[in-house]
Image 1 (cartoon, rainbow, N blue to C red):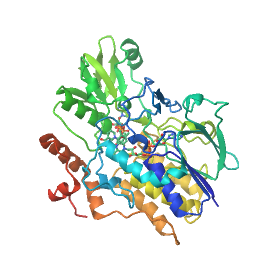
Image 2: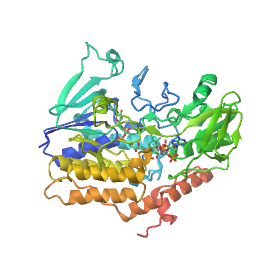
Image 3: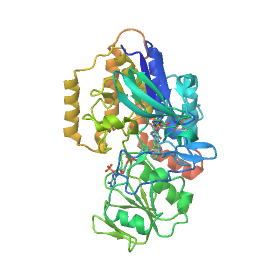
Length: 469
Ligand SMILES: Cc1cc2nc3c(=O)[nH]c(=O)nc-3n(C[C@H](O)[C@H](O)[C@H](O)COP(=O)(O)OP(=O)(O)OC[C@H]3O[C@@H](n4cnc5c(N)ncnc54)[C@H](O)[C@@H]3O)c2cc1C
Ligand SMILES: NC(=O)c1ccc[n+]([C@@H]2O[C@H](COP(=O)([O-])OP(=O)(O)OC[C@H]3O[C@@H](n4cnc5c(N)ncnc54)[C@H](OP(=O)(O)O)[C@@H]3O)[C@@H](O)[C@H]2O)c1
């Protein structure tokens, strides 16, 4: 029976996991590790941005290092100044933890940080802050090496005699380190030469902080990528500067976001020519006088602390497209006692983490019995042949996410005895989920017209939430 559990990450999903394990009970030791000094993960905005962008950025084994600032070490992340959620806040609520009633339907990032911090308040005692997990490997149990984030360890990246590492054994390791940290910048023809000839003109959405920083750019601004980051950066730039901006979209967007006539959509890119500062597109068109390119092309999956496992015959990460050997995008059937929380794109990460945490706690308490390894491997192979080894491998677009959560819920409900139960979807939540794109558009238009944010009760009174099942 599993007695000791290590949870890596003190973002929203790590917290939900720790809570699930504590509520399930039966574990002697549940320890959370967080390299930052506080909870909240990605919602901890800082104006400092990643300074060591690799161009291109295709190595999933690369390390994202913190920035040393006057106030200690800062972990740069992808959340930017004016970011508001693209999910209605009721879909980001954990069980028994509400946002304040006056919260705008799509709140500012600072409101989410405050919410997650409040949610974590009673879990603080279970966490070691300012502690980076540097290595996890399998022996008799899981051996977890952690290191203080301080000057002596160069922010947790160097062993130190004065501040030695801590090495402990755990029966299980739950990884909740987020999936939006290591930028992906594809290798495009002409990109390396462009970077050499025109340094300082290439960015990634992770380094975007505010449209103010782009306002001075002479020449055309081109954003590559048509998901949440690409759409919102274009929208913010257009609104702030009143200038045109070009967006290269190789596929239709699957997420809600703002629109503007100033955003000119272009197809996928063919190649770049730094000598003329021109970008060529697959349909033969070209854009000249390009002053800045922002790659909103997503992130690589990266698990730097599994270096040994990744060198083994059963690696978790190879090219950064997906995590290998998982059952239901969560449980590692190749490395028992190991699991990954909320790694799918397009889901409601808070809900998913809450339900996965409870599911995992019951698996480790042997209340849920998993299929055989052969069956789990066969399910993964089937998914692979259907989806291919692509970044979309773990995607769970609505309504796949609801079906996915129903599967975990069925397992959880099949167990008897005490322990936490995830919350069921209410009719309102399903309606919010189904209508998110429309709601986001209406809220943005309302704000453009009035400067006011719509709340949930405003949206309900406007009859824009289709409540039919
Ligand atoms: C720009 C942006 C906007 C988003 N907007 C929304 C939105 O509107 N609505 C929504 O629901 N979701 C949104 N998301 C998704 C977001 O990722 C999730 O909401 C959620 O916060 C993820 O939580 P997490 O705990 O999985 O990861 P994170 O918040 O990334 O937390 C992971 C934590 O693990 C820590 N960590 C990492 N490695 C180590 C280590 N080796 N040792 C110790 N600690 C470590 C990190 O410091 C971090 O605190 C957005 C994501 C991005 C990038
Ligand atoms: N709250 C908000 O408003 C907000 C704002 C920003 C981000 N976010 C969140 O942040 C997370 C990450 O979003 P993201 O937009 O940064 O990443 P993402 O969802 O992974 O999207 C990556 C985009 O880049 C494109 N792309 C990938 N490789 C490419 C290539 N080689 N050439 C051209 N295009 C390529 C993808 O196209 P394909 O789909 O065709 O692969 C996709 O459009 C999501 O959870 C999102 O919801 C939220």
